[in-house]
Structure formats: C-alpha cells, structure tokens
Amino acid sequence: MSVSADRPEEGFRFSQLIYDTRYRSYTIQIFALIVIMLAFAWLLNNAVVNLERLGKTFEFGFLWETASYDINQRLIDYDSTSTHGRAALVGILNTLLVAVLGCITATVVGVIAGVLRLSKNWLIARLMTVYIESFRNVPVLIWILIVVAAINETLPPPAAYRGEDGMSGYLWESVFLTNRGFYIPIPVFGEGSTVVVVGFLISCVAIWFFSRWARKRQDATGQILPVFRINLALFFLPALLLYFIAGMPITLEDPVLRGFNFQGGIFMRDSLIGLWLALSIYTGAFVAEIVRAGILSVSKGQTEAAFALGLRPNRTMNLVILPQALRVIVPPLISQYLNLTKNSSLAIAVGYMDATGTLGGITLNQTGREMETMLLLMSFYLVVSLSISAVMNAYNERVKLRER
Image 1: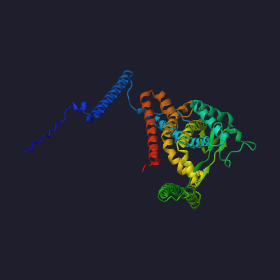
Image 2: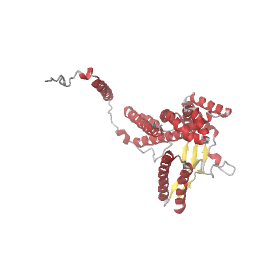
Image 3: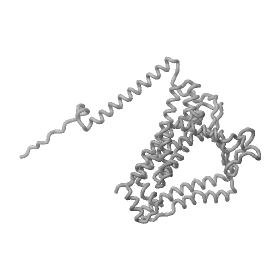
Image 4: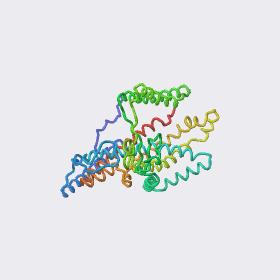
C-alpha cells in the first residue's frame, strides 16, 4: 500500500506580488503607472487652480473666434475674418508642406552625396566631404538665414521681367524666380479632367502591384524584369493617352506680370523656398553619412563576389549592397526625418507662417490661451512624429533581411 507524498497546492498570497518573481515585474509596473498618473493629475490640478486664480478657464472656444491677422503663405482659402482654428489649420498644412518637401529632397541629396563621397575620384570625394562637414557643424538656423538672404540678394525683383529688354522666364516663359519668391504655373481642371485623374491613380496602383509581382518573381526564379522602364511607361502613357482622348481638359495658368507683381499661378514665398532648401541641404549632410555608413557596413567580399558573377556595378548596388545596407540606413534615417520636421519650427525666424508661427505665435498672443495653444501644438508635433516613425518602421520591417 503506497502513500502519496504530493504536497497540496497553496493558494495565492499577497506577499507573492513582491517576493514571487512571477508577479514582481507586474507589481512594479502597476505601481510605476499609478505614480505617473498621480503626478500627472497633480500637475493638471495645479494648472487649473493657478488658472482660476488668474481668472482664466481651460477651454478651446477661442478656436472659433475671429483671427484678425493675415497669413502670407497658405494652401487653403483664408483671410483675416477666418477663425483661429482655420489659421491653425493653415499653419499645420504649411508645416506639413515643408516636412514633405524637405524629407524627399534631403533623401535625394543625401543618397547622392553619400555615394559620391565613396567615389574613387579624389576631387569629387573631397568636395562631398567639404559639403558634409560644413553643413553638419554649423547650426541649421544660420543656414536658413544664409539661404533666405542669398535668395533676396541674388534674384531679381518682379519688375525686372517687364518690357522687351527685361529678363525672360524659365520653362517656356512659365516659371519666374524673383527675390519675393518663385512663381510657377497652376493646373486648371476643365470638363473631362476626372477621367484623366482617375486613370492616373489607376496607373499608380498598377505600378505598385507590378513592382510587387516583379519582386516576388525575381525571388522565385531569379529573372529580372525592366521594372523601372515599365513603371515609367505606366506612369506617363495611360494618363497622356486619356488626356488627348478627353480633349486636353487640363491646362496650365501661367503667372502674368501685372503692376509691380505677378498674378495667377502658384506663388512660393522666398521664406518657404529658403526654409525648404536650407533644411533639405542641412539634413542631407547627415543622411549622406548614414548612407555612407550603411554601404561600408557591407563586406567588400560581397561586391567582389557580385563582380565575379558578372553583375554590373548598378546591379550590384541594387541587388547586393543596398538590400544589406538598408538595415543600417533606415533606423537612423527615421531620426533625421523627425529632426527635419521639428526644425521646421524655426520658420518664424524668416517670416514663414507654420504651426508655430500661427497657433503657437499670433493666436497665443491674441487670445492669451498659452496652456491650450501649447497643448495643441505639442499634440500636433507628437502625432506627426509618431506617424513618420510608424511609416518608416513599417518600411524597415519590409526591407530588413530575412533569416532562413
């Protein structure tokens, strides 16, 4: 006859929350979360009490009050009778405009400069080194002021384009570069233009699907298709065909000199151009170093092996070096995009009305709602930064090397 020696299971005891390693980490995290929430509640209560002592309330009704100020660069309709909320939206769109243009241009400049710095041509490599070190070691605000000053001092005024002996524009007399800004044609969508726009969007979707299919086919069979040329044809040919079939419904309205300034077209102020170029070239110097580090992280034997197999230099870069270098390039590249977006808040130094200049500047001074405007401004930059991080992290997940 045998007797069971199993001990009965003990019930849960509160002491296990501290002494049991299975629960201790959760206890610490919950305690830390409670402390943070209490600290936040104390700060919020302190702010509300201080506002009440000053006779203020915490509310956002000022966003529907009349702004009573003008904004020199805007993407949507706005005038001085619009609300502060509308002014904040204009500033936000101006910030996003600089961020998008800057990130694209900085990427192009940085990739070219990073590759050229690795060139075997001594002169080109040293020129890129001078560019990178010059921009990386001087504050971005100084470069912004220098670029804007160069535009104002070197480009002619609008009146210089007047008369037969005046200066001629660029691109079939449609683009005019002045010290006040750049004037470019604006598209005018007539009847039937919807067909062209829809056809162009369908072409973009087709490009995405074809590129994905071609990449999968290459991974499965090793056969390389002329993806770039096919995508280029899909990008232009269907839209051009629909454009002529529909009777050319999309035209361009050129800027025309009337009086002392140009009328019509798209006007890009000197402050916008200067801020865009300065941020792009400045951030491009950092991107160039990131690209150079990513390429150098790939073993030289990979390149030699590719050449031994008969791959041309461009194929070697696209198929061998870049796929391995991207895992090093993308993570720090995210930080540079975030820095460029946040550095755009320096726009107020050159008179460009972004979110900081409208919501965090004139609106704050007129309404006296410093708490509300700062919270909205911080929330905007937080959402934009997290969105950029999410998109780039998703891209990083897609391009990273897969282990077998």
